[in-house]
View 1 (cartoon, rainbow, N blue to C red):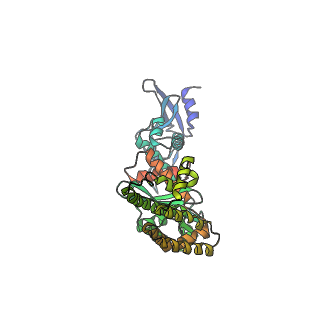
View 2 (spheres, helix red, strand yellow):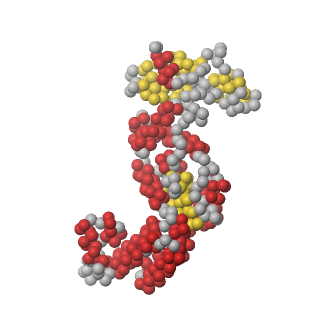
View 3 (tube, rainbow, N blue to C red):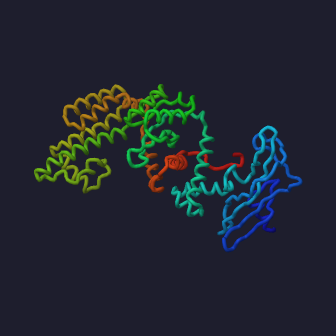
Length: 413
């Protein structure tokens, strides 16, 4: 078998195209596969309507990166014809080995996506594929675009999540819309304002999908709740243990810092270097830490009292009925206010003002654990890329790795 026949088969070239020449450059370690067609017998169709159309002229020669031939980079080269359609004018024909406007063959692009998914680090994938950063981004951008087009906009989405993520220094955030059941990111938008969040939900979900949403898990950021009320009025806002624990932990830590300052003035180092003993779950403490913490909890410390309220609030999420949960909350709130600790009182009042969202958890039993997990993975993507200067690039990376999209190119694309 001669080289042109070999590459005709391994490239999967289809009629009327054929491999006319194979050029091997040993020094550059490249293989250039020239593809052409019989100008006398070949016929083409308009890419828009599929009707036969005569050849008008030819584009300049283009090259497409293909899978390597052993250690040699392989390129497919061709001059694509343009046809003249009576309805759509002059159009460049479509070919089976690549998507329109791509400089990679379908097989190479598929392989590149597999490498990116395996490494999750764009720089590492670029090195393995012998591509530059711009080429890798182009592949990811096209993959995300086709994946979003292929999404089923009639799919039922019952439980969603809204969460913020720091984008850059200086109070710059993105808002992440997640699918709590499928554990995926649906879409991302820059900022966390009311209007941005409304746009995010409206543009990401079809009208029938919006009507079927039952709950949206979120923290107590008011623009998120306002957007939910405006765009998804039938759904409920849900506040879960992950966000509540963060607020209560903050009250514990602020109390510890203030109390430690007062004790230290009296040469008392009881609370010095104990921050993580109060913030870590008891089950995650080492034996040495557990022994130290047991002695701390037994002292008449303001920090220990606030910590006890934080721990006690876990029982709220274990309540089986709305009545039981509401009764527990009112007793807990009354006792928390009576303690007269400024930091705990602020959290207690905030929770009282968002009681409907807390009780919604009892009805739906959905948590923001998926959103928190996605948030951690987004942080990994950000760290692996050493940050993103442009939101558009950040968005593409998030959807590429966490959107659970159908990313691979098809001949029918």
